[in-house]
Image (cartoon, rainbow, N blue to C red; front, side):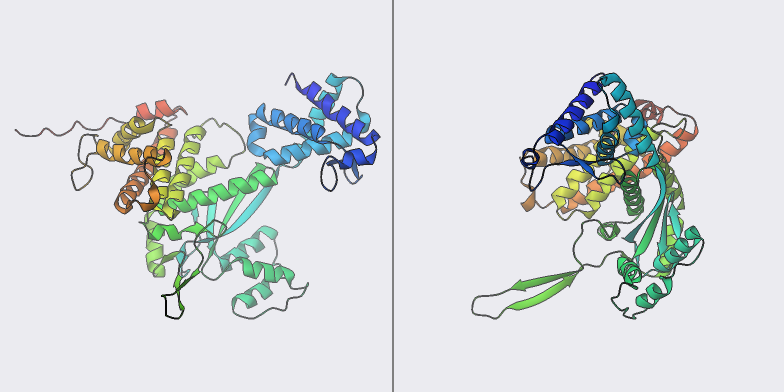
Length: 459
């Protein structure tokens, strides 16, 4: 951070100059007014300029870049805001010594950032099973509950029942609450979770609120995507978080033939998996092993420390990231988008080694030689990977215009291959991590057994 004292000097001098200058100079910095920074907690604000704000952003980014733990626990915007607060608080104390000023600034900023690290439980409405009819279950640190059980969870965490709970339950039974300030909390909570939704609960410790929320949401998506691994398309697209982009519930269709009146129809896009509670319970029970293995990887992703002695955090993050791309593929509207996402997932999983890396990893994970048929039409593993990776390159580079391509079958094969590789990877990684294996892409790959030699063909 050798340049930081000089960058801070720029921020101080520019701010002091702006304060001393006529106010119309500051007003020209922006519309309708120029930028400002807080003058300490509850003490108003100081005028400053864009050059000083740019210097503060550079300071915050430099501090995060040089501290892996801080970069993981604190969001970029939060760090930049903390830099502005720190400058405003210490501005009257700074003198002509850049090194002394920098030491004071850095220590106070670290103190501010550490004070912002908290333990938070985040709640996300999601669609899994419709209707809801199975008990609360976990995917590692992510707990999925019916909305009734969610209210009990809130009570347990608070230590007593909230005053608005009775009104929420009335609203969920169909009673219309008055739109008054007194009932505002109840109305807000009642609207937040519909009758066909579950609630995902994720407790995150050791992060500031913005980063905590981002991690919790990513963990929730990963848990939902893990459930997608055991449900076939297109049904698995209905598993998703309410805050994620998706098709609206009702879609109006309006069209007209010349000489005829307007025709009006509609389609319903139901979210969640349809079926009986017994079917849902069977699915959850059958994937207990997957929920445990996936949950262990998600749990490591939620830890604030950038490294841990065991558990292979880097390989865990690789699997969680690949799972994210798989989930995007499952939910994609267009087939070509889905194939791109699935192949990116495979590329992430193999460590960016592209087509050959995907094929070699698939051989070991699936114990299937690349020259052996893997599809019923006789397509070998190598040929399948070549075909799918070819789509990735040709679509991304514009050789194939994906909108008019009929890729439904290839999409299905891409999703299938990605799912079975993610499935195998997480179980192999669980065993590898438990044995104390090194947290390295190549070390993990080399620990996987070679596939059996291809069967000899008769003359």
